[in-house]
Length: 189
Length: 167
Image (spheres, rainbow over the protein chains, first blue to last red):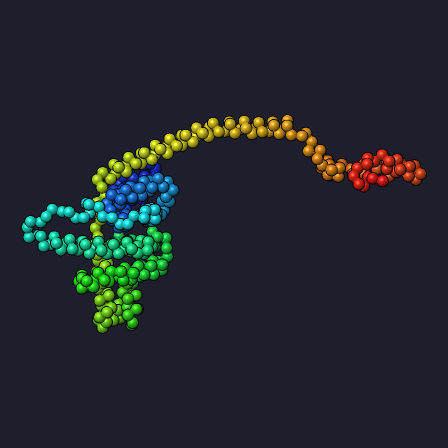
């Protein structure tokens, strides 16, 4: 069953159709929320709130519009509201620390490398978190979530030219912030 | 090509394909400029780390939890709607009786004629009366002597009011 049919059935009150839409999108919405809050429980809660909002707003959704873009726009606005309200900085919960089983075989070395890589990644996200919200938002959508360029423009409701200039500035700012850390690594990819 | 332009093209190349000539010019610049080459490496590294981030799965029983919230929201909104309807149902007769009471009070307790506070000319204007009705017989009198007498008597009959009436 295609997405449009599922949307129409959901609008008509079919909960099973909405369940399928949730299955299609919950991971994407969760990943988007997680990209901002970096906390599994908070991202899960935000995803629930976003999809509940989508369910309630379905009657006002115009069928000729793109459902995914509409949903993403609701998600982005909801996350923006959350970030505005919450002055809490990015937190890492215990289940994200990576307390996996201790390797006892030859995989120990690769495990260490993985842990190092994970720490470097966390450093990039920590720096991303320090950028102004509009730059953080656009980098998350484009470079973390990998949304197409045009989709980013539609989701944020801005002109493609603005996406271009904002992305340019955001990437330059992030690189500038990351430079001391990259120098320590010796620019090693 | 200068380094500034090279950086702009490099960043643009992350989002769209550059024309072949621009791509070659950029590659040429990167070959010649170690600083820009280093910068390109850093951008690639950062982008790789951003893109390589794999979000964990949502918490278990995602749909079941969402469905419960959907049902709760619906029942809350239904209950709120019912309460609102009930309120409306009782509000309509109450409002109507209040309006009726107000109208009755207006009819019975307010002065019957609003012209009481008005001056003579204002009353005439409102009632579309003739301002010279009293003087009509005088004007219509043909005999001059009689008319003069009528004017004199009429002047004596006028009530004395205010400074203008003092003689």
